[in-house]
Image (cartoon, rainbow, N blue to C red; front, top):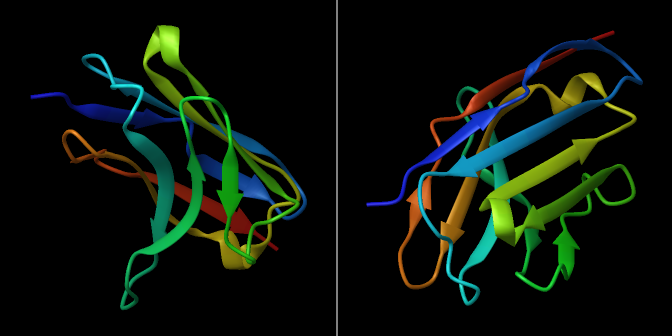
Length: 114
């Protein structure tokens, strides 16, 4: 079973940047979708970005223009470059792949201070 492991979270000041990585323990099929979600206490997990194996991306309105999702198929890795971070971006961030199989990462905490 393929597992996903995120890294790159941490504490950053408002306006700062972070890059999250999500490494798969096996091959992510080209037909699998991939993306990022986030969750804050007491709220449902929120989808924020998707990226196809060809690099096509879609974003939620809350992050569009500030976050960039990408995917390195050779490394079976998914990235989320986050810029212009705001306190409202504070959350646990999860990567996910879906299609032939569905897998979630364990989450990485991002905290943005004002």
